[in-house]
Structures are given as C-alpha cells and as structure tokens.
Length: 162
Image 1 (cartoon, rainbow, N blue to C red):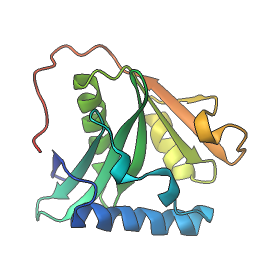
Image 2: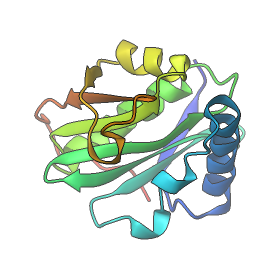
Image 3: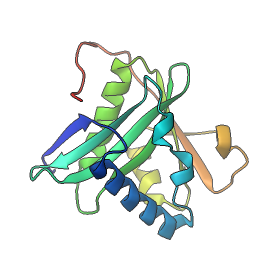
Image 4: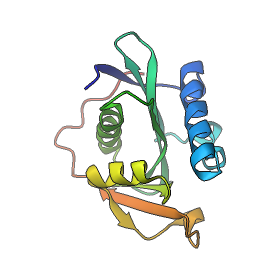
C-alpha cells in the first residue's frame, strides 16, 4: 500500500483540477460521458468537502468530493485514484467516510455506470450496497447507485487539516 497524505482542499486548485481532468478523460473513454456535468465545485455547500491524496513525493494521486444532497445524506463525487496507486482509493474512501461522520452525515450515496465494473467491484468490496437509482439517475438504465449507512462516530473531535 502506498504511503499517502490526505488533506481537505479546494476542488479548484491546480492539483485537484489535474486529477479531475484525468478522471473525466478516463470516464469519457469508458462510458462516452466525462461526468463533468454532475459536479460543479462552485456549488459546494458549507458541509461539503473535497479530499486530495498526495504520495510520499508530494505528487497528487487521488481525490474525492462529498456534497450534501439531503439532510444527513452525502453524495460521493469525483472519486479517482491514479492507475498504479494501489490502496489509494480505499484510503480516500475511509477518510471520506470518517470526515462525513464528523460532519454529521448518516448515509453516503453515489452513482457510477454499470459498464465501470472496476468501480462497481470497489464499492461492493467496501461495504456499499446497490440501491434504487435516485435523483437525476432515476430511469437511467446505464446507471447503478450505491448506498452505505455510516456508524455513529465514537469520537467527533478530530478533523482533517485544510
């Protein structure tokens, strides 16, 4: 597993944009849609956040966002780990879940495309369950949605650094 540093950051800084562009390019090739239309950093609310992962050489290697879509429900967006960075995705997801708990989220939801088998397998491995499509994904047979109920946090005094 790679040694990485995780930090809350601005989704519009250069490193964050670089990773989001790489994700968009990958999704465009795989699904025919870049996914850019489903995330606008300018609309992040006060409980929303963006995490950036850097490797031991301080290079950006992964990112993920969480935005509140209903009371206590956060939606995972722009999850990406550079190819070849084993374990980065799982570390990002655990950090996102921890931070979501600290911020009072009770459930996490997300959507990916059925054709993105790597993502489907990743979320199933990490305790997410397939749920009915929600919001803009209702009636879209190419979409698959997942959800996870977060445990009640034991300690809520820790937060990532910004």
